[in-house]
Amino acid sequence: MVRVRFAPSPTGYLHVGSLRTFLFNWLFARHYKGKMLLRIEDTDQKRYVSGAVESLIKTLQDFGLDWDEGPYLDKKEQIKEMGKVGPYFQTQRLDIYKNFAQKLIDEGNAYYCFCTEQELDKMREKQTAKKLPPMYDERCRRLNKEEVALRLRSGQPYVIRLKIPEQGIVKIKDLIRNDIEFNYRDVDDAVIIKSDGFPTYHLANVIDDHLMNITHVLRAEEWISSVPKHVFIYQSFGWDLPRFGHVPLLLNPDRSKLSKRQGDVAAEDYLAKGYLPEAFLNFLALLGWNPGDNREIFSLKELIKEFSIEKVQKAGAIFNLEKLDWMNGCYIRKKNTEELTRLCLPYLINADFIRQDGSQIFIKSSGIKIDIKWLSKIIKLEQERLKVLNDIPEKTKFFFIKELNYDPQILIWKKSDVATTKSNLELIKNNLNKLSSNNFKAQNVQNILNCLGKDRGVGDIFWPFRVALTGEKSSPPPAEIAEVLGFSEAIRRIDLALDKLNLMS
Ligand code: GLU
Image 1 (cartoon, rainbow, N blue to C red):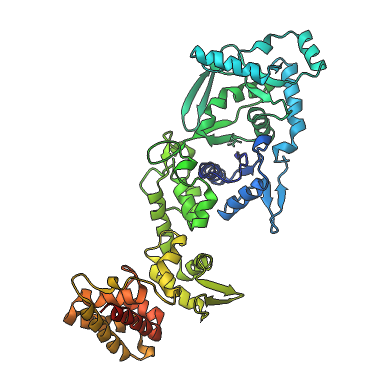
Image 2: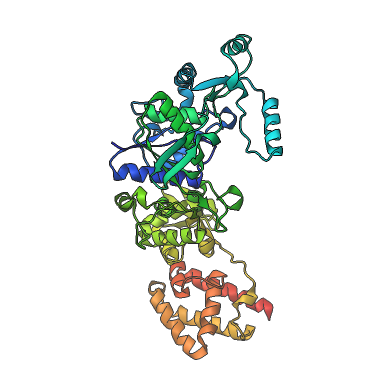
């Protein structure tokens, strides 16, 4: 049975690259009806951030992802664990690592190293001066047993290092990169237990993957250089190797490594901005994988069915925000308007346009109580053009602001003038007044505008009407906006525009 894991070191936020690694593991597990584990690699005490694990799990859960074993947040947002091979926090498994490290020492596959930071710095300096790659020069590997015993007894601080063979070739068949070869000669005697007694990534990761029966290790490309160290540990214990697959890096459009400096890398920020979880996961799935044809929109179910690790590419994948926006727009358009309205509500509340009191909703500036159906009409007007939910306040603000604050100059169409604009707005107003408030429907308003436009010029009619209603130069069709605003509000806004024009003449 396939068993894969996502093994983050919590840093306070979930990197989009890590989320993509989670996703590939998850798709692989679900495709083969295997198991997905979450394991927290928290042995680096220097990087400890309080609350990081909770926020990491919450982000994964907010994306609608799940797993079969490991920690999760219950309804009260408390961490709980599920699964039989735990604990799934490495800091709760320290004795296990200590015992295995001892075994490596006893069997001659690891050794104590007493070098101080200063000694190591000097060593590195010398190597760099000689243009050699910085590597541990193995001086403690040559200490005899008595010397080691003496130093241990005297309480000298130490680390434990792998005794990597002097030479020999390590070959693996990577699921994505095919044959990869390493020469032990180029591999450092990596530290496996630090001076604080905590294990490093190499030791803890391999032991846990073995004890947790992981069959496939799908992880980021940056871990490739760890392979020979890991293989050495597996072989020292006589354990079978899992299959490895190293997924490609995420790149900025200029092909540099995706980094914090060039934009957002925290997955939770994308949710906050109003990317839909299913759209974002669809986008991530295509970063490094494709179905072999040019289909791009996939539900999670479809992804599970289609995903295959063989189709993951080696080359870095470009994190293209324009494509993400396009994809999010596709998902937004597919939503039914009621659901989209519910999703947009928090953004309008956040922008201070509306206030929610239990199940009642009010416009903040006027205190007027509104119906969710009215809000739906507004959202529907924008649904086609919306890329992220966070854009909704900016795009719809004129519905909620009582006194539109715009430069009256923008009411005037191209080569027109104040007097013509005033007379056109008055004409529009008089004609709209003929419609009773019951008849104040977009189509009727549109007919009036079309009719007047024939006479006075389309731009001269539509332009000032749009600006009067919205204070904006572009918007959805003004007749539709008029219907949503309602008869008296539309007329009030035209009057407001006329007042502004009067002040100009
Ligand atoms: N803890 C490692 C990380 O933070 C895990 C790498 C792996 O999957 O082996 O990415």
